[in-house]
Length: 328
Ligand code: ATP
Ligand code: FE2
Image 1 (cartoon, rainbow, N blue to C red):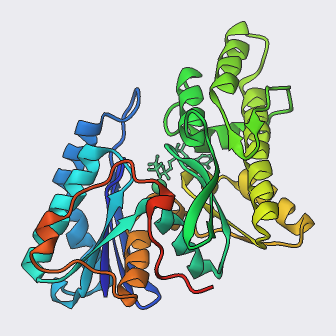
Image 2 (cartoon, protein in one colour):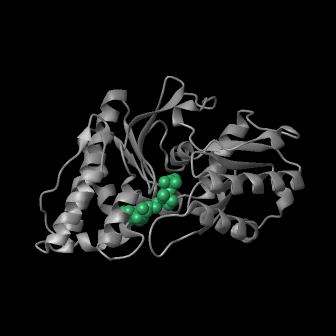
Image 3 (cartoon, rainbow, N blue to C red):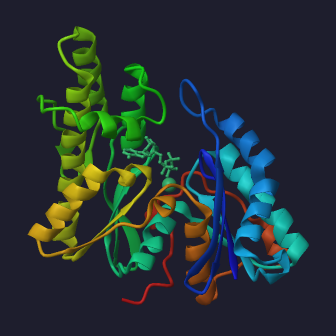
């Protein structure tokens, strides 16, 4: 039984996995009314909610902490103050329970959780607040085939939504408004498999300020434009790697229009489309536990005194990770 701890950004989450079953997935997220995340405040949030989240997770799984075999935690990448809280909590708990620790890369956890939906060797379109990447396994590692050159797609949507005064998080609100919108032209920004959003953001703000456009139309066109960019980049990665599966991950992947566009693209090229349920798309502890379990089975674990030496890796790149557990 593996316990997984997530703390890379807004969310402090704990998941418990036994074999391929998720027994618990509990989280508590730091939110702000205005402006973006303040790392030190998010860290404080994690510190304060950790015990409560753990208690709730054990209760949900209906187990005692003595049943835990090992603890997986998100070691990378993310905001340093947030990662440190997760690490401290992991060390304390591992010592108390006398169990090994498995350091996990958060982005790869988003990908591996796709196994639960049946994906075996997918291209992952990872679209969250802070991250926008196209990742796939090639040559012994998970590689980033394309990514955003400026902000993450979720942050882009949230920034525009805040500017328009429709609240936070912006994604679900934009999705609702888009249902009543029609298309107006926006810049389209993709280079190879990389995308960029800041130019589109500036244009959207200008259009809103001009008073000539309805917010519904801007919301609709925003979705059509940036999701088309993401789907195009993902399709290019699928063609390049000859992979026949697409998997979605990250909070923006909750968007039904993005899911629909991915589905259509996959159908047209005879590929399979996978999307986990929303609670596994957003940042969560269950995916950390799930990848921890896969790594543990391969013998990857840190024990005893070595645990004290563990550190966070805020800027770890996906392809820095040695992938020993993949047998394709
Ligand atoms: P990460 O560290 O992985 O970047 P994060 O905390 O920034 O994590 P997530 O929790 O994965 O991100 O997702 C949050 C983002 O998802 C927000 O930007 C939010 O607006 C967006 N989002 C949530 N639901 C929807 C939706 N239906 N449509 C579009 N965006 C959505
Ligand atoms: Fe994430």
